[in-house]
Length: 124
Length: 226
Image 1 (cartoon, rainbow over the protein chains, first blue to last red):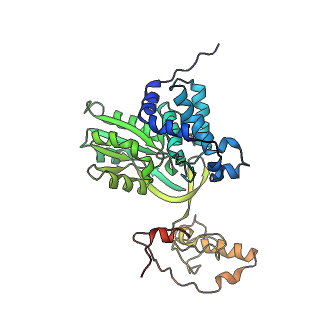
Image 2 (cartoon, each protein chain N blue to C red):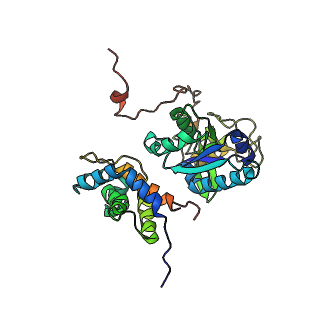
Image 3 (cartoon, chains in turn orange, cyan):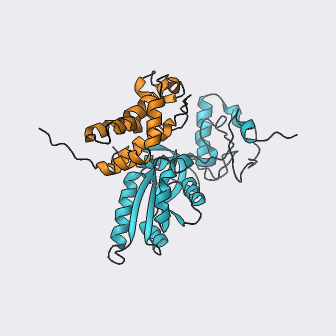
């Protein structure tokens, strides 16, 4: 069996704790109306692929971390890295009728990844 | 995108020498793409500075943190606590990011760790070429998509000059004459009439400070004159 690569959960939990209110608000207010998708140029230019929906991106990054209390494997974090760095450019143009600040939540997902040394590598 | 290049380590070291607690702030935008100021480069610079200063002033502290974009207030919030305890900030963003940080934290010295060089294209990993100087009056429509401001050594709007040497520039024999390229491409497209007309010099309007308000947003930012 492959040895699971350890992650440092302290900085992850610190980010979750510090931004608990915003994350909770986002997760509870999202009605999955998909209006945010229409405002995302990446969603539109990628054939309406649901993984590019802004709501999908924050729910499956910082939302997932929140629900799991920051206890996730390195592999999950790597998948998260691909989601928040490769499928979002943080143009801040996504619109939510309920007032969820989606770019800020995706940024938190990126912050978490950065604490584990996971970020977009441009020289790969 | 904006392209930048790391400053020599000794120059950076001189900036921060008087300070003990140095916060190195990277940017996840353009400077990450051109491998000058992203998280990886923050980590490298932090190690280099620690090695340089380590033995002489062991109590000194270097901290690194990368924000997603230094040119947008929205992404700077996480820095507040860190900046409070720092003696100075070393920004690895472009000139816009450095100035944005300096404005946000006016009581802290903010130093640039990179030289902002150009708006350019990626030729390969770590290899970039300037294509635009953001002059504000794009003339590419009549110069066959070749920018005379950027590519001509003299930035001529009406070229070529008398110094063109066949296909090469008199300033540097290794440099292609931009106006020769413009002529060749326009001729191939049967559009030479584009450069027969003398173009007036650039008006250099809206230079200080250049402000951009997109179409449809005028009313939001400009008060109507009564």
